[in-house]
Image (cartoon, rainbow, N blue to C red; front, side, top):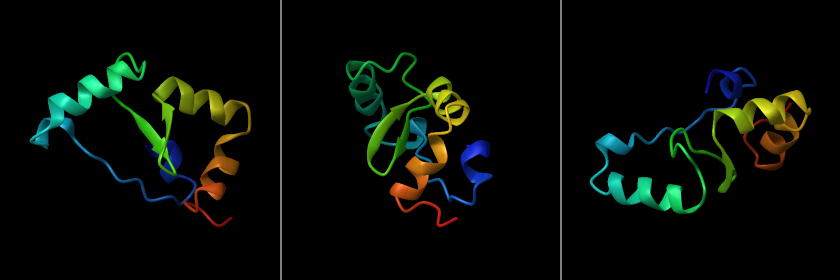
Length: 75
């Protein structure tokens, strides 16, 4: 979250523990192949993955273009 916020994007965070259907969401994320299921990062309604995938996108220089394409940043 800090990395994404550092580019000026405002992340929306959903805490599964605070959601009435949090367990269902967790199971659905696991079925999508996210292990562990949290954090699950979506950029522009697209499941990107977890923290490792975000760091990998940053290293590859692909995170900022994804954020721009999603309209999350305008730089």
